[in-house]
Length: 502
Image 1 (tube, one colour):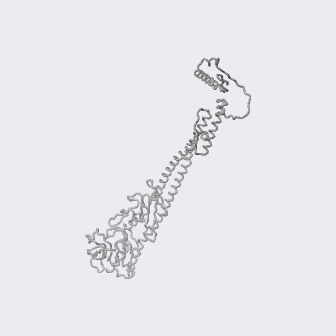
Image 2 (cartoon, rainbow, N blue to C red):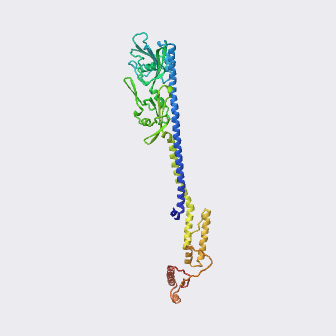
Image 3 (cartoon, rainbow, N blue to C red):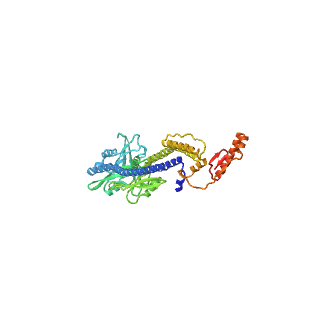
């Protein structure tokens, strides 16, 4: 460090170096603080959105089922009050009114204790009914199977268009009985409203779950009112409601089976009339498996994990007990969706800052020349004054007041030293300038050797030799004597014609 300050530094590079040392660290500190602040803000924003979406999604899922539960309870309540209401086709219009109440319901029906079945359902024009495609324009259907009279069971269909006008019928002997079905058996066992596990809808060939409630007559089971909802309906909800473009969300059962997903991928199979759900760790997308493995084993707090250098925030929350099923809402969102805007801002800030620093360095470089260039010329002038070199440098005119004053002072010094050298030997003046000795009045004793020399018979020589030739000879002689005196650290006192005194 000591050597650094004892070295003679040049002004212009020093100004540039100091500017860079003072500016660049401050700039990168600002960029780092901005980046960390933005990153913290983005993470906090992501956590808030995930928490809010989790609460909203759970509430919306409950709200989705809430009206359907109420409709099913109402249908069961009518059965309790009027046990014979569902024994005739007058109930079909009522079931139809429930069906069109919510686009989530694809079928509304009642299974009676005697095996009778009445249903209002939606129609898929591409799915055959009793071995044939429904008439063009079919949108709804009434369906009933009446076993109350003990006759052979016949499956009746009345096909309706969008205006509820009848456009076709179909009848076929059937062995279908609602009583062995999962939704009927479970509801009778539970003796209360429930949501079944995923099952295959016999008539529709679809997979979904059923909201069902029992009704009674004289204390005995009289039947079960039920509404069907497909798994695709939940997947559609998750797909349409996302925190960010990269967010994926899943509804899982209590074993981790995927009931619905925002990617609308098929996550279930049907074997021998039984539905098998894919586990969240066996999906084609590996992301949910990694997230599921990183989840905290206790509590339902948000958690973070990384995959392929990307960070994610995830949440696994169980629906409230009053929902009736131990379903879980699984949300995974990439932090990049929230930090990308900040990253772009940080990159722009970095690029703009670097360009600004480069521009400032150029400006400082040219502005520093306004200060350093005149000072360098003054430095050169002072060096020439110190060595008493011949020749005059042009006067220096600077717009900077201090440099202009300094230039005039150097010019005055030059004039003064030249005037002084006119009366004092130049060698002595140069020696005094190069030494640290101060000029002051006084004197002291010192042993000196006085040297005097001249040319023998110079007067005769000057009369015989041409003037130009004589000048060359005398100059060569004086140069030789001066060099000899200087080599001995002497001082030329004066030149007297051809004589030299030192």
